[in-house]
Image 1: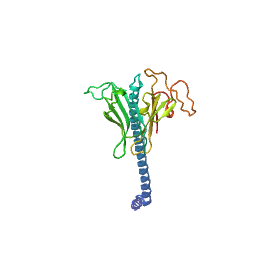
Image 2: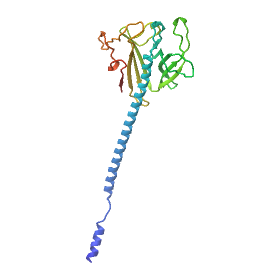
Image 3: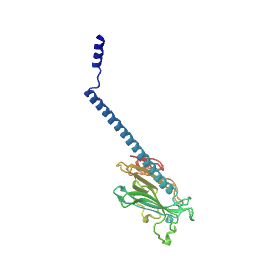
Image 4: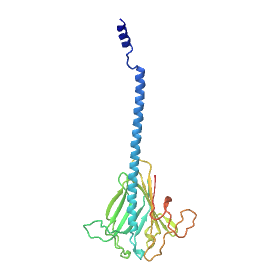
Length: 263
């Protein structure tokens, strides 16, 4: 008899979870799932931002290196009237949209199957499609106009056009000459050469508001028939030009060919 009572008592004490326990467990599980999903989304967003920044940095430096290389190989002549350098300032909703054209020396043929010289006309600037989307382009003309301006020969711009980036939204070029900065270098300045050219490129990743800016400059310390030495520039706003030394970079960069990347 005692054995039967013990079995019944043991059966009565065996039970499952209550409704309250199940409800608490469900809430805790949902909270853990939401927290894990939020953390995963945050990680994926951070990875995407890093990828966008890396892409922007690479494209900016690639475009800047192309410009710098062409400017360093600028075609030089003892007679500055035979040197081509033109730049005009323009503005859009994105910011500065300048254009610069000059002659450069290039030993790599743009079209290997055709005979070419080593002097090319190169142009940098922004072009826009029908949706007003900016593209940063480089135009290389293997057969520029004869350099002698007395021939008065003018031809429409031609050459091989390359899109360097579709997310560079601003291109700003400034010229330092006779202790002043100029936004343009028009045809009236033929026969003169700036001491320094400052270039600023702004990149905006697609779908994002923040931009990345790359600044650098190129100077011409030695020129055939000209005086040596680098440009002496006052960037402090005091109006006094320091003597000797190289010009400071813009936005805190220092030294020739320096750069500044800032978000």
